[in-house]
Image (cartoon, rainbow over all chains, first blue to last red; front, side, top):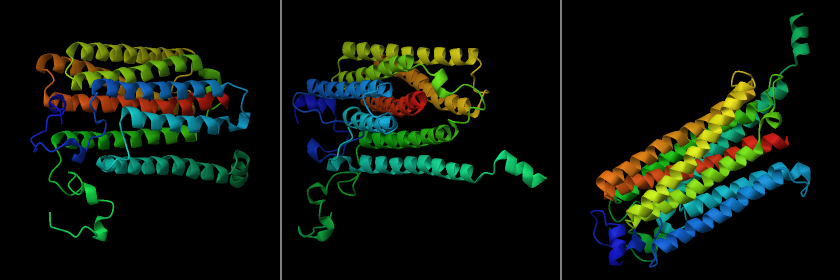
Length: 142
Length: 215
């Protein structure tokens, strides 16, 4: 650990143990020897990837280049890819052992989000399909 | 920590990192980790809350009650501009975080100001879009689709507005107190918040605007 690293990440009332053994918070990243330049490069890569994916989303929404019925799936795939780019390059979520708690919390969040959205759409579509039409309701009341 | 045999099957995959704090060994985690993790849990719960609005929108997007549909209302050029503002502000927020960690005051204030201007541009564009929709009779009272639209997009807009207030607070705190450790914890939480809002916006412009206009 260099002196400038000490200043950037004060040991926080812990022993001065070396960084690689430490847990890291979400949003944290290990600044290597090159420090700020290295960090800025990560944000720049993320920004370029995200901008490219966004541009692709807006382009393909109106394009005739791909088979039209597949466009919704394409847009969803591009959106999920861009969320991944944001998580990795902006929020610095990694697969490292120091990040397992963050990844586990994220996985649980994604599970709940999936249950809420997929479950709502499924149940409401099912109710809608079983709902009698207005004519049938009138017949029943007759 | 009790001495264990290196081949203990309970330690497979954990051997090298037994002493990582926050994973049962090595004592309590540093404040920085606890603060960041706690805020991460809050952000995930916020995303779960947004997922409820998304679910409501997904169920109600066809319920236009004879009123205007997504295809007739939304202008993707405006949305592309909003997206560009928010994405660029996320990038400059990242640079501001780096400047804060490196204790560069001028670069920090510059990057935070750019973030503020881009975030404000986003909010102004969104408010103008909402005002336009209300003026042509497509307000939240018109149909269930528009109620779901205004509550979902408006909720994100309120988050960005609160984030802008927080951004000014962070600049003021750094100005008054410097790059102190507790101030840096708050700065870390702010940047997490700002990046998370951008992730929600990615889902939002895809599901609401792009999927809306192609249907």
